[in-house]
Length: 224
Image 1: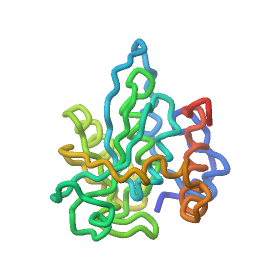
Image 2 (image 1 turned 60 degrees about the vertical axis):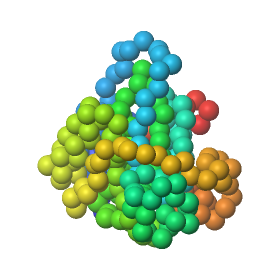
Image 3 (image 1 turned 180 degrees about the vertical axis):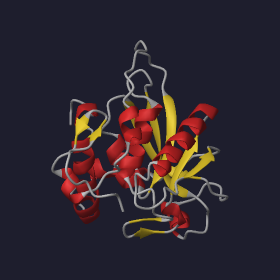
């Protein structure tokens, strides 16, 4: 569980946490404040990829879709030993795969550092192989890095969070090299936007998304 916010409001990316902090406790860490690095690059169409596992990919996809600079998010499977797995296969917990999202982003608009902050805010990284009622290795907290720079940043950030005791329990996020991404079945893509009235969307995804939007309100796309 996250440490309880007590007196003063916590600044994350220079944004104030208010009502959302009463129900969802966010890490009290100076590391989060440091990730708001201004982007000085010229606009570019060259996209980079980040791959995150943070529980159910329906939730993660919906959260990262909100951020300015994120051009596309795909749900899929990575990190296992079974080729071309199906959702049914992955749900057995025997494939080694995690539910992940490929986040395609413009580094001129949003940095990998900022995506890392969003990743660690979007779920509880102290839980081993579960998020809420979703239990199994397929729901593990994991970052699949695409290059040495991503690996370095992820490891340094994780270490700082643990050194600063930002959470009551240690961050257990797996940091592993990216190998293969298997795109999930079509009905998993853009799931929340297409199925917002479904019970899981209403009772699980929407509360997470509402809190995420409050924290990153200045980082959201203008359409949200």
